[in-house]
Amino acid sequence: MIRSYTSFPLDDDLVDRILTLLPDFSSLRSAIRISKAVHQVFQRRPNSIIRAVAENLVGPSLPQALRVARLQQHSIAKDKRGDFTLDELPAEEIVQNVVLTSTDAQLLAKNAPVVHDLEDLYSWRNKDRTSKVSKLSEHESVPFHRAIYRFWAYQVIFGNQLPEEYDDEDEEDFHDDDYDELYETNHEKRVSFIKSIPDPEHCEFLRGVKFLGETLAWVETATGLHPNLTFEQYAMSFGPKVVLDSYRTGGTTFDTLRNGRRVLFIWQTLPEVLGVNYVDWMLAPEGQVPFVTQVNGAADKCQRCDAVKGVELWNISNFSHLKGMAYVGSTIAADLPGRLSENVYECRSLHACVKKRAFSWEIMMHQMFNAAEGWNENDWLCIDCISAFRKEHLMGWWVNRKLAGGSLLLEDCWYGYNCRTQVHKEAHASKLNHLCAPTRGDA
Ligand SMILES: [Zn+2]
Ligand SMILES: [Zn+2]
Image 1 (cartoon, protein in one colour):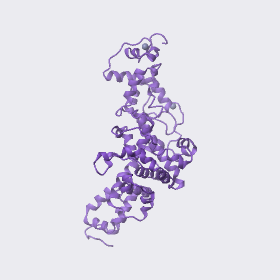
Image 2 (tube, rainbow, N blue to C red):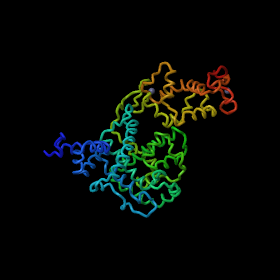
Image 3 (cartoon, rainbow, N blue to C red):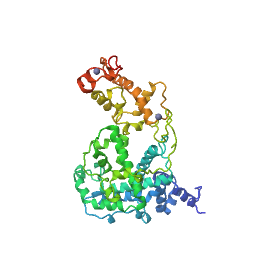
Image 4 (tube, rainbow, N blue to C red):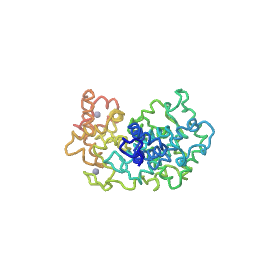
């Protein structure tokens, strides 16, 4: 037994072993600061300890994660303008024989939470609706991480950078204008990059890309702020962190950037690798296979209608996700009664309200459930039952919301929500209140 310091109660090998089990670099840093004895053990073999901690932090996808970290430091990938070949860039194999630098460690530590948080989101939506922390098994999680990191590598080489990611603070260096042109220049390299992914792992890569695209589509539906098809493509070109940030902030990142690229960041490259159009691929059986092999609660039923819906069940714990769901978040006005869903004046103000970034669907649903008898916000409901619920309670909630917001009470139209005139005469729609039951006509 060797002890560096006799007063220190653990022998050096044990300290070494403990250091290699630490989950991340900040724990390692704290441990080294604890005592000189620990520091001395670390100094004996820093490289293998740092590598062990990197493996704990990143997991089996360390080769892919390290490549991203190395690319982020690479001048060719940073500049993008120069003529380069893929062979000049760091490959996944470097993990086998490089010593991790402190910059590597910093970047690994900065990137890992992004991939972990994306996994949490993926798991919540696809594996276990009751948990916002990932429930993916290792078998499911490893391919997910590998895919996201590989897309990240693709993005660092070929994608866009946010102005703040540039080393120098010269805003004029933002290469946004050259982007379309560079896309063409690097076309062959993009295809080669994707083709270089081992064949059995092609599908998982595409699934990762699909998930990131779906997350951005969710943001578009939730906010209605970027209602054009190229938003998703453009946002993808900034990489996984921007996708995650967009999900969290409702796409604020893009308020200051120009939108409307015509090039499809990765969708256009994929057909040459797949042999089919990406949309066709997604619809084909192989495009439908998720990372998840086993869904928790797959046989769970709607507590209202008994339909087996598994992960597609909703209650107060995940109502927030409805905001960006296609056909749910996008068409909330369709759940207004009568002809109100064709009343442009009313629908416009309802949509403007519910699509605000800060607007919480969880609170809206909570308020509706509070006002409803015979419904419980904790019950797990299918989307059809949610829609049935909203048909009963959305109008009442909207009236209260408008009154709470200081809107004046307009005189009720006799024909209420069934009024025909509200559909084609905006002046009439805005002059009288139609959020009420009819007292004449179709009543
Ligand atoms: Zn149901
Ligand atoms: Zn009317």
